[in-house]
Image 1 (cartoon, one colour):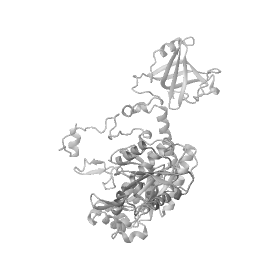
Image 2 (image 1 turned 45 degrees about the horizontal axis):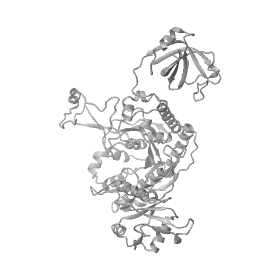
Image 3 (image 1 turned 60 degrees about the vertical axis):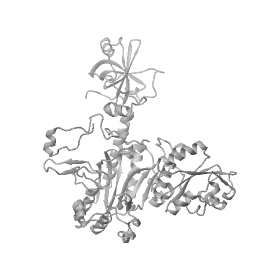
Image 4 (image 1 turned 135 degrees about the vertical axis):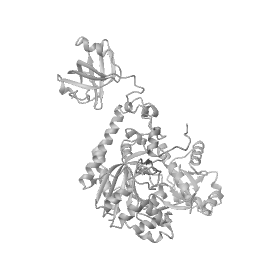
Length: 598
């Protein structure tokens, strides 16, 4: 080894030892002829002293050191002296008096600071990712990711799971997002797809009798990007045979209990809370609720019936709803105008409001509502609103009236923004982790634009037994065994008990418009496998990137991925995606007809 120690391990007990360190010149200071260098590697910093009275030759070399030069330093460990220690550094009690210095490699002036205090803009960070990753905070994030991955493998191996890799070049099948496709050189005109998930293959592994499978799988989806999405991400993929929903939940709760204890030394309380999809939509307007704070939504559609407010009446007559969020403080006119604008920007036609006045602690019958629309609501209806919302004096009621989907979406966004604005939740919370399972999802949802049913999640979720009778007659009534794992308002993963009966699978495919011939063409290999005895099986796919990000109080998964893409799905560091040579295209049988965009 070129070094005897790392830059983060030497302490007072190592005084007088002769050692050799390797690392980067983090900082250089010249104090009256004596040069001090903070030598850095991923383990920490060690102060090195170049004193001309000790070694003139070495000191002369040190005079020309630049930031980020790669160095090899040999010398003796010495105590810094009382009052000169740096308590912020693990190595802060000691320093190295240099006997020898080798510049392994010199560095240009870096285009960004290798420091956690000064963060460069995103494009610079991604362009020079290898420099960004030298920053201690980025190295700690990747170390945490590594620890989580190790804990996952350790946990599943201890529970008799087999780690199995599934193919990266697969058959293109519709699973929701667009596929990335790879042309075949051997079979010109034909393409492989990169897997959006190992879904079909892990089900086939259950047919193969593997019983308990897991994998840290790479998943690739050609979709629009945002903070919690990347073209490629890593999924903790799990499948189990002969299980019920509760078995999968118990196994995954145990996994997270171990991860959080081993990596963060936090004891999670299990079992996690369970909320049905209908309850989540009713109370929070979203199927991934943040349970760290209250502000539950209230449907007041029945309470306001018979009012003289035409806007609400018209929406109710057209199968809409009126829902309210109770803000625990009085809002001024400017604040209310800002909320109205916010609601409209997120899809609402408008936002109505009422202020609750009266003495604190009074019953609802003794409170009053004030607003420019209150005159359209009788005293009796006002009391119904107050009872339904359980509002108190000083509260502000915000109403959204629209189709259920729009009303819920808008109020869910208002609720989350209120949570942050009112400091009910912290921006980078690493102490409060609120898990829940959302269960009993609808199997189908109606696509109004295309006027057809499509899978609400995917078509392989087993319908509830009691809802099988509605498959063809009323698909909107069919609930399934899908469950989502949610943490602090973020969906970590989704799973279900799978369909293992080829007849039921074909019935589901029929509902979404796949004929027998189309089903055979796209999924024939899965349907055929089921005909040879498929066990009851279920599992889940969980985002490893999202898990690590939330554990660190982050919302952008790029912060825990070594080499992510930017928002345009490009890598500024290596220049991908890039043009390929004409020769490669000819070998693949590809010719561009479209004009390239500049």
